[in-house]
Length: 522
Image (cartoon, rainbow, N blue to C red; front, side, top):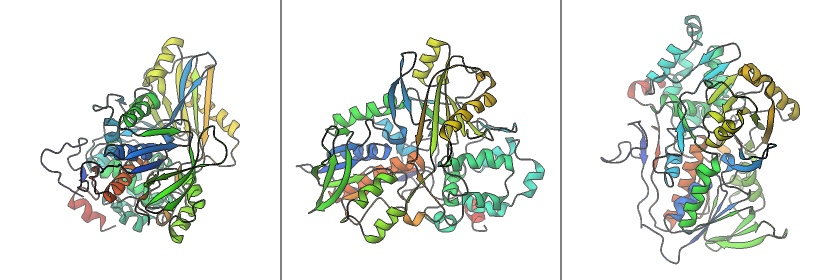
């Protein structure tokens, strides 16, 4: 870690305290004949690993079980009832400015990040009428928190007097892995109870974050919530405003990156499922089921493997690969858990949403609805459909849905709640709709940190990547996926004596000595 980047180093954002994690030195490219690597999983982590390896001359096969790349940020074509072809996806993602390593990946094909556009605000609304905004909140800590408290109607003098500020002091100096040693045995809900935040502020500011992990605060580790608070509020001056893709994910992200990988000589294979792997001398043999092939897997040998798959995928491969990993490591992987199911509902409607409605709105108290995105206000494809039809495209999210929920009834409830949130949608005819149900996000439960695997394994040329993978950098969600993907590539490059790729992060501790001293009193 290098706290003070060398003079002339190009910083990835506005934060002058962003931290550079330099790459290990070595040769510029691998020696010939180039080693081969299978990158299993074509989400953010897998694509980041594939790019980092291919740029150093490694022969890369990127193997993705779905028909498209992108993982949880994937998109695919669909035909609407009106005959128009559009793109459906797994839902809204915010590209925050402190996602330095994800943005570095995107800059490979979009140096100026012109394919992203900013949203003007990150508003939060409760059914009681409480409303918050981050538009005018200062971005530099500690003024960011003080400004939010001063501007938010959720904080009155009486509610502030009831708070227990000492319980919140650990938030002033969040470090990895120390924060997990201190708070992983506590739930996010219990942690918030100890602080005694006002109900409105808790719903609007904190539970929105915890549910970003697709988890109920009663199940989520307080360490993960504290890390999020550090990344967005007290550790970074990038603030809570974010960017979104100007076009659907395939056009904005994955098609350009696929072309970039192909130009580097990598092979991208979709519809391929890796069933198992086994060590073979200094490499591995993979059993791969290809699209259209018989049920008998094909066997392919590689010098190295990156497993950048979701929790269920990792558990399935490990269970079918008895010679991979130690007994304790395999047991830990087996104990990893999924977050509850989530729903993304997208509606193509026959009337417009008011033009002053925000592109994205976090909500609380509107039944199962956790947020609303008006795609036709910011995404090019949706805006063109809306202009051609006079309608609008609206997306609703429900996180952490109970596994026994009546899915059809919940979808109907979501649509009714939209009319409460945006009354102009009442009575609108739905031209068409798409509903996506998934349960493949990792859960970070109380006490679960010890089971989460690290990038490196006992096999020097078998590495892991993904947002469920542990890393010493203060990152989360999509940024953890991009970071561990690059770290996985760097670990393999080191075995061949090749230079790695540098990484950036928000500061890995409290931003100043006063905040760190106060945290020690907590």
